[in-house]
Image (cartoon, rainbow, N blue to C red; front, side, top):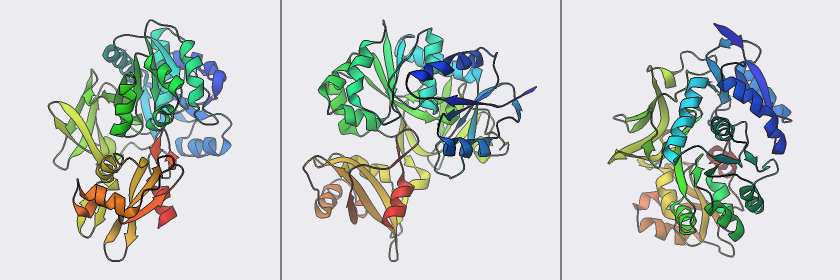
Length: 382
C-alpha cells in the first residue's frame, strides 16, 4: 500500500503547537506520511521538496521523512515509521524513569526537536516552547522551566546551547531543576560537562541520527531494542527497533545495504559495554603520511584555560598533504597563541597532532542541530 507524502510546515514559537495534532495522528496511524519543513524559509523548503518529492507515493508504513543534516549538499530523507518513533519514545522514557513534561528549545523540523513533540504526545503532556527562531537566549529558560508541570520534566539541547547557559547562573539553576537534559547533535567537551554537572544539571549524552529516530544510545549504553556493532575498521553499525526503513527514493543506498542495519560514518569502540565515539571516519586528517582524528585533538585543546570552543580541521598543504589547523573561540579576555596550543597538545598527544595553524573566531559556524560546519571552515581558511 502507498500514500502520498505530505509537506508539514513547522513554524516557530508558540505556533509550533499547531502541528502537534498532525504528529499525533501520524503516531496513531491515521494521518498521511509527513515531510517536516521550516515554515517561512522558502529556500530551505524548495531544497527539501526538490530532493524529497512530496505529493508522490510512498509506503504507507512511513510516518515521517526527516531530512538528514549530513555533510553532502543534497539532503537525504530518512523514512521513519510510526512504530519506530513510538519505540524510540518509549525506550527514552524507560531509560529516564518515566514519561513527563518536555521543554522544546530546538528547531522543531529536525529530528531532535520533533522528538520533543512526539515524546510529549506519548506522555500525554503539552510541550513548553522556547522560541529559538532568532537564536537561543538562555535568559528565557527560568520562565520556561517554571511553566513546566511535573512530576518529571525533561529537555533536549545541543552542546552550544549548554555552553551559553553556563554563563547565566539563573538559567543554569533552572536546568538543574529538570530531571534530565538530553544532549546530542555533536560531541560535548568534557569541561562543559563537568561545569554543568557540578551545578547539579543531569546531563545525558546521546548518540544517534535521523536514521535512528534521533538519539538511541544514552551515555554510551544502547536503549532497549537498539543494538550496536563495531566492525574491523572501527566503523559503528546500528540496528534495532528505532531504525529507519531506508532513504526516500534511494532504495539501494549502501548505508542500508545490510538488512536491519545502518552503516554510520563514525569510528568507535566498546569498552565494558559502553560505546565511545572516536570521530568521523570521513573527517580524519592525513598529514605527512599519518592520520590525525580531529575530535581527539579537540578533546585536548578544549582543556586549555583560554579555549572556549574549538574545531580542528585539515587544510591543503603542498608538503604534508594536509596540515592540522585549530579554529578557536577564546575565553573572554584571552588570546591563546599557536605556540601555547602546540605545546599544550604535544604534552598529551604525538607532536603530529599539534596544530600548525591557528585562527581565532567569535563563534564557530554550525550546520543542522549544533554540529560544527567543518567544510565551511576549510573553505574559509584554505
